[in-house]
Image (tube, rainbow, N blue to C red; front, side, top):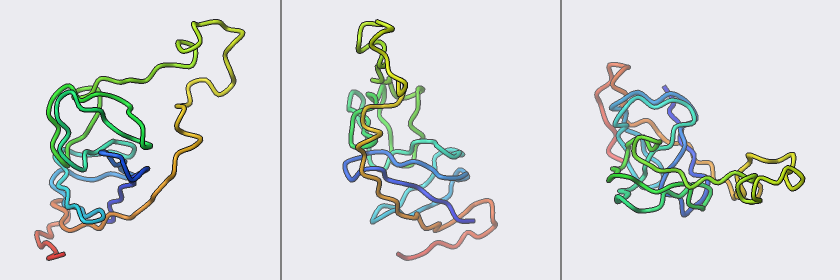
Length: 136
């Protein structure tokens, strides 16, 4: 099985799963080894370093939320441990319909983000029966 993660910006403290990663799978991204703390699905955000309660969660190099509890590397980051900082375009403009654009709902960083895609190497996959791990 080939598990993949994408870091969308060098400053991000989360990466994004591009496919299913079973709980317990050890992956290596850059110089970091992560063990999936739960089953992860495509699109799930995963912490790549400890994120302290109250610390901003960074994706696209921008804050997308604030951790509501301590989050360890390999943990899924979502509404159960993060409060969103997303503000819709309509809210930013005072809900005046004449001021909305067709691109409403697209995050402000999406158009300018620098995407860095690096394949995460599977070190061990508990579902494959291969308990070996790489020494990398």
